[in-house]
Amino acid sequence: MKTLKILAIIGATSLFVGCASMPRELSDHKEIPGGEYTGEAQNNRPEEIKYQKLPDNMQYVRASDSLVIATYNKLKEDLSVEEGNLPIADYLFLMPGTWEKISSTGQNENFNKRKNTYTVEAGPEKFKFKYAIPKTDKSARHAWEGVRKEIRHPAFYTAPEGSEEANAVGEISIRAISTEEMATIVWFSPFKMVEPLFIVNNTYMLGFNKKGQLEVIDELPYYLPYAEKMKAIIADYERQKQEYERQKQEYEQKKKEYEEAKRNSK
Image 1: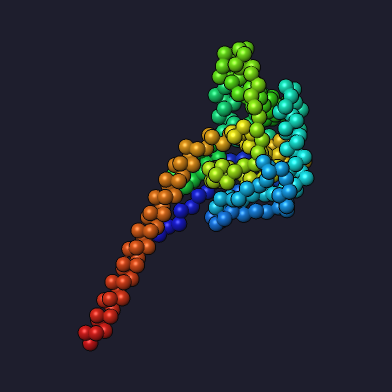
Image 2: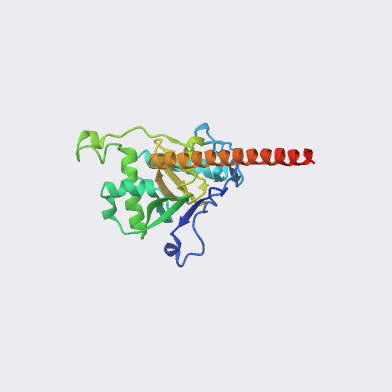
């Protein structure tokens, strides 16, 4: 029986012409029971930002506790005020969940960007995702500020413009990504989970580089329907695998009985 292969095909090569290397570590998308930690850390952090147990197949790159704590404090401070100045990396990845939101709210017209796609193949199924990278520092700042606006003002893009509801400031929570959330995104992120990495308001996934600069923005609820489809594909594969093993054992047993009967007839 053929093994179910899950493969992410990244169409990002053209975006990095002139770069020394890919800014963020790509996932291998391979089967890893219990997941795989790399990087050194003691997890001596505030409880809400301690890294969690990994689901199967997740590759997680730990950063030093000092970097994670410093970045957490910087992010918390930035989101506590109306005008922030969070450091942004040279390449800011607006991943599918965020790019979908930006496109649907019309924010994509406010900055220059390079758009591309990547495909996740699971057996016969193909999942195609769109993402973008702002072309300039100014464009990256525009993109982040659009997301930041919704983080601070949850109804900003849904309530009537200028209304009290649209301008109301919501509560802000920042924490580590959970085991369940990692299981949701594991097959759909082209990248490993690289710290510093935070979940804001149970929705936004913000990834930073080693300099504490914002490098990835995504929205986890976007992947829930895809995760359900992937679960169904994997479950179907497991059923087929079990049926194959049952038939194989049945065949081996009948073969054994036939050979034994043949010997006894002599």
